[in-house]
Length: 434
Image 1: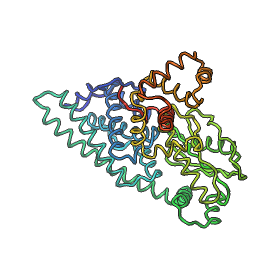
Image 2 (image 1 turned 90 degrees about the vertical axis):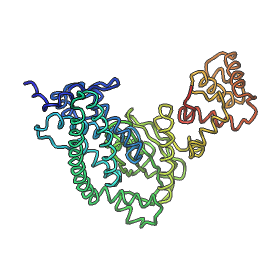
Image 3 (image 1 turned 30 degrees about the vertical axis):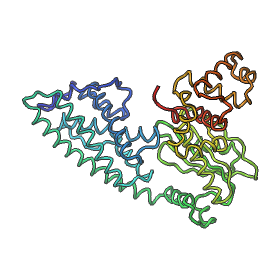
Image 4 (image 1 turned 90 degrees about the horizontal axis):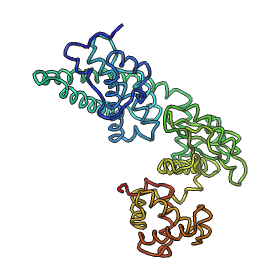
């Protein structure tokens, strides 16, 4: 049966289309929400809503970084903003459908905000920013598609209806947030998370009592791990990966603490005083991990976690360049050097000059020069290592020196450090211009 026509005067909503290339498959909303929107409005308006929802999520994170933290949190937020833009469009076009202003996707995000420790005031601020972006998009579209004889009245009507919509949306978000917070506060998971938080904050804790609460012996030697995924809610998969990696490293017991749907903290109780067994890469290609060094007791529990978090940060900065399992022992120097990322960028630009250009040619010169310094300036060793001719190595080193404006033996420590930063972190420390 064909869909009924939109409310009188709202036919312009059927003309909406995304400004950029957006496909139906890119929608973050549930299949039911997507199907409902297409059935009543068509694919063009759906793609318009997908684009608007994505921009709303980006704006909210830019204004309120607490909602960010990687691709997983972004996609969770986008599900809420996109589905809300689609729902608002349906309510404007078909006010008699009896739809609620809130979507299940938005409520799912609301529940995750509670588990991530985002406050209600912050959620309400996010709603205000989202509403501002949504209203601007609808009013601009209205101005573009409605005739001049009635555009002013239509824009006024749309603005008023969107205010009523966002009031109902905000009310439903508050109710769900408070209900989820009550559930969370009374849950065992919250009690464990609170105990872990106290340890990580450096508070003195009753070790036997806290160990009993956690089901994990705090007096042992601990290896901390951070597991994360760049897309989707993979809490169960993250837990499985963390368990497997820590067990493979010799852990006799494991404690896991989810941090939202896309990040998980974990600790394994490992034996002995020697370094633990190597931590393998996760079997699931969607998941990446970072780990600290083993430490004893509550202080070691905290220190290993801090190291794992620093390794996690380095891996996120490195992006595709990072290994799927990053150990703090391998990146501790880089972690110290990038505590102030702006200073690290300035250092790389100053030491490398034109050699810091973000181009494939400059990247090849930097890689060759770094290996040249690593191999104590042995052209033969570098050629064998890179599987290139000796003449190629000689040319690249000379060309690099021309760009540097000095011999590679001058300020060698600084040069070696800048090259290492560029190799491991790439765009995170290189200038963005060509």
